[in-house]
Structures are given as C-alpha cells and as structure tokens.
Image (tube, rainbow, N blue to C red; front, side):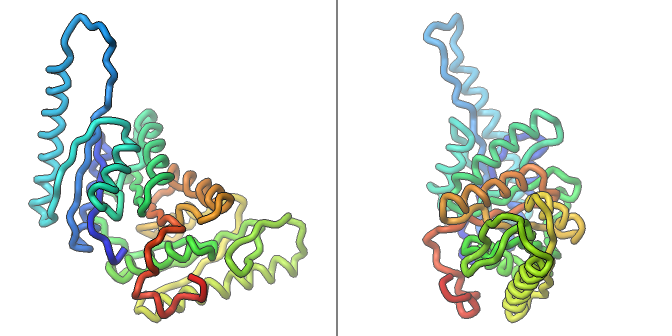
Length: 316
C-alpha cells in the first residue's frame, strides 16, 4: 500500500457511484496519488440487417457518458485530487482489469451494489468477478449512509488465518492504520481448524475440550504476536477470537460489533485449495460485509513492505 501509484474507480452513474468515489478520493488524497474514473459502455453486437442506422445513438451514448464522467472528475479536482477519466467499451470486468494493468493502478475501489434488488445483483456479481481476477488489491464499498461521509477510518479490522496471504493483508492493514492514525483489531475466526506451521489446516471436528482450549490458546498467542508487531510501529492494536461455522458471517458480525470503519482480508491463498477456501469466504464478504472491504491478493511477486521487513516472521 505504501507504494501506491494510482487509484482506479469504476463508475456506472448509478446511485452506488457516489460511495465508491468517496472512498477512492479519500485514499488518493491520503496517499497523494491520482484518481482515475472509468466508465465502461456496453459492447452491443448489431444484427446484420437493421431498418435504421444506430451509429448516431452510439455517438450520443459516448457524448453523454463523457460529459457525466467529466462532471464527476471536475468535482473531485475541486477538492484537490488529481483526476483523469477513461471511457471504454466491452465487458465491465474485462475492461476494469485491462485498465488496471494499462494505467498501473495499484488499487481498485468500487461499490458492491445499489439498494434496489437488480442493482444489488448486477453490482455484486461484477465486484466479485473483479476480485477473482484482479492482480492488485480491491476495495468494495457497500451503499450505506456512512459511505457518503468523509472516509477517515478510525478503527480497522484485519482478519487472519496466519497464512502467507493473510500476512500480506496484515501488512496492508498496518500501513493504513499508520496513514490514518487508526486503531487496529486483529481477529481470527476459529472454525474447526488447527493451526499448523504455515497457517490453518482442516481436520475433522472430533476433538476434546482440552484440544479446543489448546487450539484457542495457540490462536490467541499468534494474534498477540501480530498485535505486538503493530504496536512496535506505533499502531494501537487489540485482538479478537471468535468461533463460528461461517468465517464470512463472523467477520461481518465483528465489523458491526467492533464498530470498525474498514475490514481487511486476504482475497485468496497461493495454492488451489487455499485459493478456493479463502475465495469462498471473500466472495461471501463482498455480498454482505457492512463496512468497506479491502481484499489483498496473496502469492504476488511484490516484495514484503520495508516498514515491516524487520518484524516479519521467517519464511514471509
């Protein structure tokens, strides 16, 4: 996150647009990087024979989209953030990823859905699709009333399963906590897993009370080590252990109970199985997390952040 160069904010002019721009603008200002507003026009294949020429209609759509996008960018520029605009045509997910790569955008910020049922379905599916294939972090913003207030997170929740992918999410959460002078809550959801040397390992839920207590004790110890690492960097950090069959629902519950302003998780692990498990949790979180959700991909070639290098455990 400290090496952020550009924030990409896809917009579709729905009521959800304001929520995404609000958070994207705040992050661009805080990290002193430009904001790019992207609108994707649908690519409509035309039948071979038409009774009328639809060319003028396409031109009208382009003109209207450029005017509306420029109006949004002008408002952001007035508030002191350098902003560019881009209009492309095609599938939304594909075009967002193409723009992420072409413009070297290190962070995608987008709303999850509108309040209406159809908006919820369309925006949610696009956001989930972008999370699955984006090479960099994705931050989704739910359409809540808080989403239109200035984004200035005072409490950040980072959920970890102690994997390498979760380590990257923890590093990003610490960096954001430093930037915003936020408190940090480091949490783990205990779901019939034992903690191995390299993270969570699934096993059958046939254990004794003593084994449960031992597992929770190990989780607590590891969480406190993470909290201490954050504290050494000047970040106020606490820990939370919860139990439940659904990590996504527990994380969403914690976000509400802890009154956090931002949730940070790993979007997936490096292996196919870990990617599927973490991806499933992340996909559910995108749908119903009540707070802005930052998803950090695992297994990238990016170096470990310098500010945490000295405190990183062996093998990270």
